[in-house]
Amino acid sequence: MLNMISLDIDNAVAFSIDGKVTEDDMKRILYDAQAKTEVHGKIVIFEQIDNFD
Image 1 (cartoon, rainbow, N blue to C red):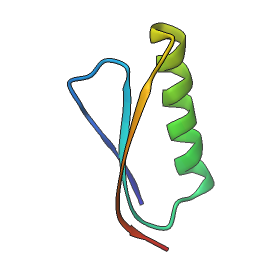
Image 2 (image 1 turned 135 degrees about the vertical axis):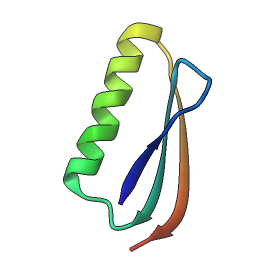
Image 3 (image 1 turned 30 degrees about the vertical axis):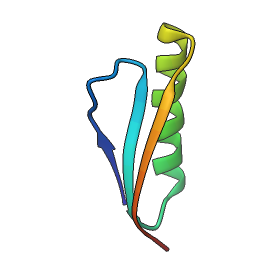
C-alpha cells in the first residue's frame, strides 16, 4: 500500500510504503514526480518504508 505524504517542500515527492507496491502505485509516484519536475526543474524524493513485501 502506498500513501502520499505532504511535506512543506514544494519540489518534494514524498510517500510511504507498507506492504506490496502495485503498478498503479508506481504510476502515481511517477506522475507526481513528472509534474513537479516540469514545474520546479529538480525534485527531491522522500520514501518511508514501513514494511515491504
